Image (cartoon, rainbow, N blue to C red):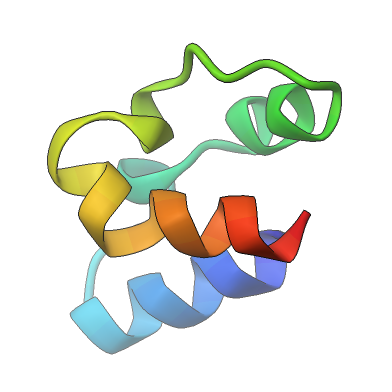
Length: 54
């Protein structure tokens, strides 16, 4: 998941933390779905890819 976030952040030229923090990625692995990375514009950019990788 971290690799996905890093790759997308690099492509967009922004910090990974703007897309998903390490804490959010860990929470996602633990089953949480109420995360900033899974809402709004972040969902469109990274959220669906993170869910697909699970």
